[in-house]
Amino acid sequence: VHHPRANDRSSWGIQRLKYIHKVYDANKDGVLNFREFCTLVKHVRVSRGEKANADTVDVETEARSYLAPGVDASKLAISVDEFIVEVEKQRFRGTSALYRTKRPVGGPEQPPGA
Image 1 (tube, rainbow, N blue to C red):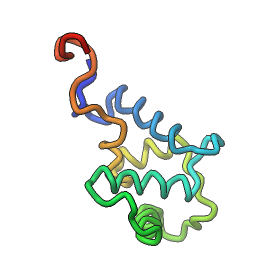
Image 2 (cartoon, one colour):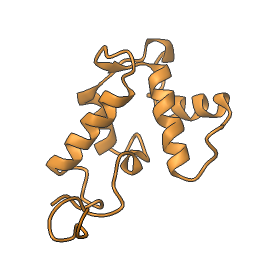
Image 3 (cartoon, rainbow, N blue to C red):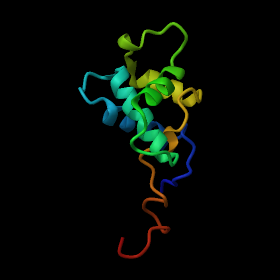
Image 4 (cartoon, rainbow, N blue to C red):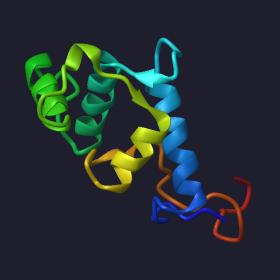
């Protein structure tokens, strides 16, 4: 049974992060470029209750704030392993709300007929 509040360092958490990376890797090249990363940041903002039509400049500014100093956003390429490490170091904040259920999946906590 996977509980929605499970620690991201669990095997479920790692699988969820791999899935998030795969979903946001729109061109399927195995890395997140800056555009793809901005989309992820925008969706994190929505999960925090911010408006979906957030200004592109605001989203890009927030996305740049997660990058190490001196990193050229146009050359950004975040591999799945780098993504997992950065989330675990809490460098990319807010991903825990993406692709999580509001209740446990499977097991006795699952309501009858679900």
